[in-house]
Length: 389
Image 1 (cartoon, rainbow, N blue to C red):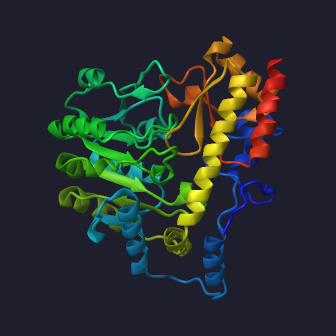
Image 2: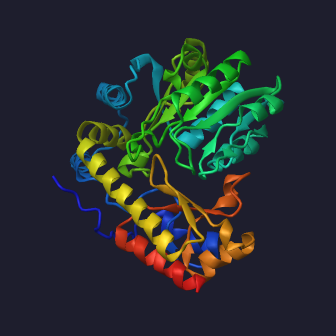
Image 3: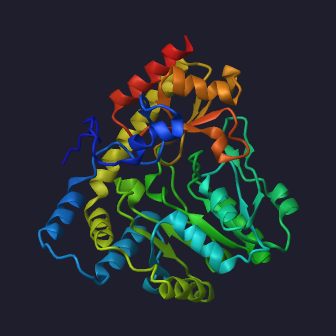
């Protein structure tokens, strides 16, 4: 089957976050939204049909978690990432950011610290801070080609005995980096020696692009496996973020017992009725759709690269190795923060994510969501071109 990703879906009346909060967050609602990380592609029909089939049975009482949920997750991870996950390692969690908050409350005391690697997804900073924990910054080092690497020397300088947990973005958001096995092994060894737990957010793991390969953190060494809590979900890949279908993988029995018993005691490990249905459909029937979607996203990225090179030479997109988010380097424009926001919002009428929200190293950048029909991207870039005139 050939899927049509050029089809523009009118999301009016659906209550979608992307459009509904523009006035609140950007001060105006006449903006083309390319910000929050869900795609403007229609959720694939095999997921919708599975949900519709369950809706035909119009009684929505308490349900049990089907064994097929875990079988589908295990098989998908084995086939796509060569990782043999055991059933007992798995549990449901009600969202990855929520999972991070839960793990912080279980494993990090109020006088202990959480390490993050900015520029990085902003809840990595906001969630520990909101829970009263101190955040330690280990900024990534920018390379000459605009990409990034981990700064292990600085990490050693800022880490002390109060550092209890490190939150890893793998693949990295917003820079789209698929971390190498060598880098992850080095990070695992560093954290293992210091008894630091690593939460690896791998929600973009099924969206590697341009021949790149995602490496699950827990697979790179036995040390990594023993300190890892991995979070994943089909939500980004299959555009079902509104159906909360996240899961955790914890190989270490001691960590697992402590974390999962807390989840169970608070009844946070039971998925709502539609989450298993959507996940099973996605993982059992979604491979062809995923391949075609990634091919379309790659062409979208090439389109943005070509347009910027020819029409917007002072804006330089960093090609992502994974996902549908493009990190735009706007520093050559010479604008300060307020001027850059004014350009995109008030002049170009675009809603992107401001680079500064991702922390150190984000100044002068904007994050663009290219998970949209190409006509929408073309319109957005033309608006930006006209604004710069």
